[in-house]
Length: 467
Image: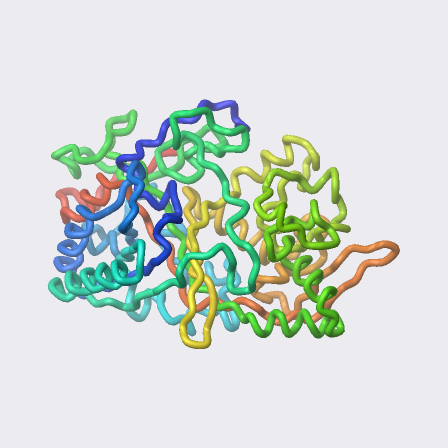
């Protein structure tokens, strides 16, 4: 670990299960988006959901339930006019604000005004119930139960986002989920050297900077029954064991992607697959180009222990602008590429991803779900600085060739070569944002606290702490 700090053990019985597992044994999933015209109905539904939430120390085999709440949802549940300062600023203001649009690339065809859901100005999302099941029948029954409970409290079901049955390929046909960070402090055994301190993903624990992640702390009078854990100052810690959940519905233009690749490769199938792999940074099997530069090698499909600097410093194998190299540059960034200093610079910008693919009629895509303790430093930094940034290390290309928003105008993609490079110009947009939101995935005690309703002194909060 970069700080030399010993990892604290996560309180798994109070952490929602999605933080520590993707529910790989539960292949069916749906996310129910809920809006409550009246707060009493939202509180009733949340209290019902609390008793069904799957904790991190449980390994379910039939079903799992997790619950996330938006800033509007917290205001409705608690009666607070303003949220405690310790809540993240992006979470407090929302994903669909004009400022965030520029940061995230949500302009043009990604503009929230065209989203299917997630626009706070029209009908704000309050609660998201995430359901996972062993089979379609169990999932359908659980979705109907949520609908029934919502109707009983006058809560509206905005949309049910139903996923494809779990698989390891994205809609473009590439293996997904290979590069997933390990959270230290989850198991009782020794953590691997690459494990990240739990404060990178869970509030209330030390992060890679040796600090406790900023989180909302309350006045003691707001929690007279002492439901919440107290921090070192004695303040009730609403953030403890919670995290922020990023949700984005991304439509993937599969035909457009492969059509462009075939045309750019002169209808040569082998060259087309190689170009597609260069855009992604891995072959369809998951094999990284840094280790398999000329042909796919399924035996390397799960390999994630490699760097770029020693084997491919200028991108002759895997272009510097390739998607997976942008989202995780590994050891290739300043100040000293190829050293631990470079790796330490990347560690605070990782995400735990829990997304699943979907098919809706002719539309195919990804429900992108990511967990992080600091929205600005993790998700937004990656999105703005690495994916949609126009100054990525030595790269001249304006944005990510696969998922870039094309917010800087026509995009290009450079493939280094000897003696000369090849630049592909005017790449179309292959991924479109169809909806999105920032949510808080509370610890179980915090969720119980929120479901209980308003407290006295509800607008006088202690400032959140990262000490």
